[in-house]
Image 1 (cartoon, helix red, strand yellow):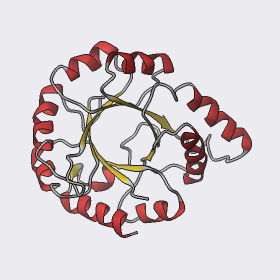
Image 2 (cartoon, helix red, strand yellow):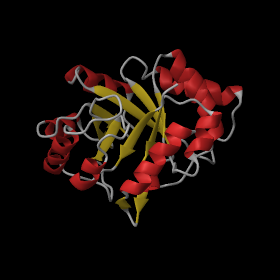
Image 3 (cartoon, one colour):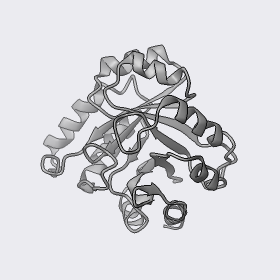
Length: 228
């Protein structure tokens, strides 16, 4: 199975231009408070650079906007300038909120992120499986993908990978792609993909040097995914 690759937290057009030809499927722009935060005008400028890229399948990567408990009006304000393909919701957004976003922007994909707490989610029992199913079932009709991450996102910290199999089964039963993020880098992504089968992987801090995206680390990460 071909795994989709998302590089998140892009801040400069030079890095985006250097990614031309890499099999990257999505590029993320963070609108939530973060050291990687961009405003709508900067994102619009970066997406123009993104439009010039060709990945391995001769299609440009999708532009993903990362939001955290933003109002529908705030999302709309960003979309008024930045032509996003995907709205990624990284906070406590309810199923009703996701439904409202999907209704207002039917041509955009909506992804919902769920944080995995190591101290609470290390149990892979039937009880946890029921909890995950209960959690995802409310969103299944209003989102286009599920992403699991360490709490907060972008921290560079992994979570307990054993829960991935549970999310794979349940997201798969709803025909929803599952992306995995959280502490991934070129030295551990191969191990993850040898043991689990997510539809996509998402990396941010794992391809940075001193807080800035490093094109050589991006290339190394992509190469490890392809060659695993």
